[in-house]
Image (cartoon, one colour):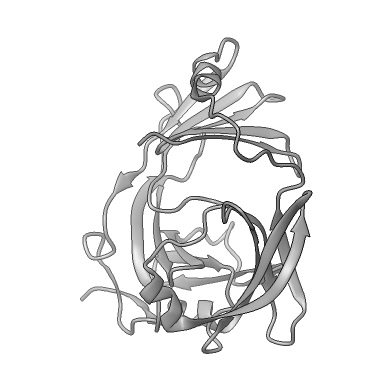
Amino acid sequence: KDSFDIAEMLDGQPRRVLRHNEQVLTLWPSARTARLEQRAAIQPFPSLLTGSEEQLFERYELVSEGPGRVAGFDAAVFVLRPRDAARFAQRLWAEQGTGLLLRADGLAPDGRGLGTTAFSDVAIRVRAQPDSVLAAMKKLDGYRVVKALPRRTSLDDEGWQLKNPIAGFRQVSCVKRSLDPLADADRPAGAEVLQAIFSDGLTHVSLFIEPHQADRHRAGSATIGATHTWMQPVGAHWLTVVGDVPMATLKQFAAALEPKR
């Protein structure tokens, strides 16, 4: 069954994202640039689960918090509480009639909000209009079209391994792509980055492995809302670990990654 969606990103540099199944087109109107790529395995909000319910409830407890209201719709409010310290809780608002996820909040162990993803305006039970997405994806006059074609691979095939699995997380994707997001036939790709994605059924952790460049890379960490980032060298390579999980979980991934001998 085909699936379609359109998203307008209003924060940061304005851009428009159109998706038809796994084909994703991102438009930057100000730069007149369009990037076409294939994405698999993980879909953004309002999709929720990437694994089975059994996997999810191994690591989270579901607690009802009663009714709520989001974007003019009545919602049921739930909290997914982690069963360990390796992940954050999430409070979820689901539309009463359809179960559509309307809002998701990341929660710190002390109950503080770490960030919210939500609809400000949404229409439910309207007829889908896939032609509007397909037509927009083909109407690219005046745009420089860049095709980003990641190659599916595996950590093992690329000479890497996690010596100690991180409890509750399973690898769901591994791809290799150019470090230059605008590389194309006229602008050859240089170095590549390897991205491995792990999921506990609800949240995700990405490991990015690339050649180490001393003049560009600086070891350390960063935090924006629920999203944490950890950066460090691994031999001749540079590792960046990103996820909506505690920093300690990212450090576990970093400590477990090593070249195969």
